[in-house]
Length: 414
Image (cartoon, rainbow, N blue to C red):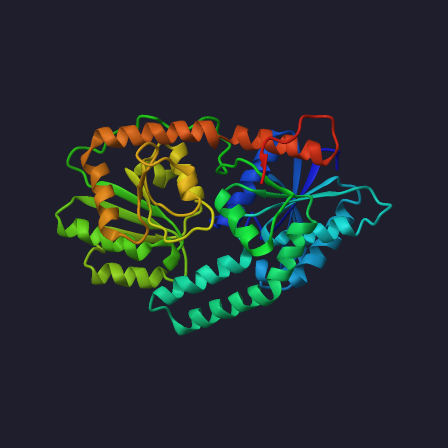
């Protein structure tokens, strides 16, 4: 252990959850912490204890009982806090993610008034009750299996009745509450009240490659199908049904295209059946989750994110911007904060299949537009989302929290 060590409380195992958004977000911050000169130690729960090295820090697995998700924080938090205290009797900064931040607060609180001061940071990308309710709305929009609806409804009830209390206390007891989007700030403050300890910081994808993507992507090979990519969970809030409807419209109009839908989720099989009913399953490949999407981004001509609601933004969108891949996105939540319409992406109303099909067709038929959006996306990525921006901001924030003599953190209070 050194004086540059920072405890990360991530809860989920970042080595096991390869395709999950939460762990992707955590790993991006761990890479940034390393770039800023710090040593991240990531604490998570699992079926057996272990400590292992990774490319983004040291992963400490702590034995607990399933489920190993945020809904289990009431019984995971104390176990994680005790493990942190044993491993790091002296640690000036504990950086947590989501509701797992309650474990960080407990670990800091246990030091007592005479112990070495510990400052706590929690990153928030949604309010847990709001995310749970959006998942319920998601399944209610579709003819989802009864078992899935009952499971999500029970989890939402648990979140509202139990987890919301923990989340409120965590937010107000943490030294800093970090958000990346105004949409998330509004969501948190509408539920939990003003957050004078709030701070907005930049962020970006997990990639540690400096610089943006190619600003001039090669055009589609003449005569070859236009390649459409969607990276999203198969939940109704992600708008996959809207996308399939749009693709069916394009098919009926005679457009030449191929589509790949990457992601897991409770409606994966339902969406495969819908593609067959729409008679587009020969053009649309629904492949499920993949450990990485770099190859998918390189092979595609457009990324499509047809979300109905997001709460925050999309890491897949930032990765596409890094690769210089033009995107069509719904005008919802944090997606509107990440792109500028007609400059770094095409933006369509959520739930409008006709508008979505029209925007994809514009990019398919107008090479000059594709090039302009590609360049705009790469420029936006360079200015706002390159890893160096997050590394600089985290370095300054950690120094401030540890009381070191450096400038105040890059970011603005909310």
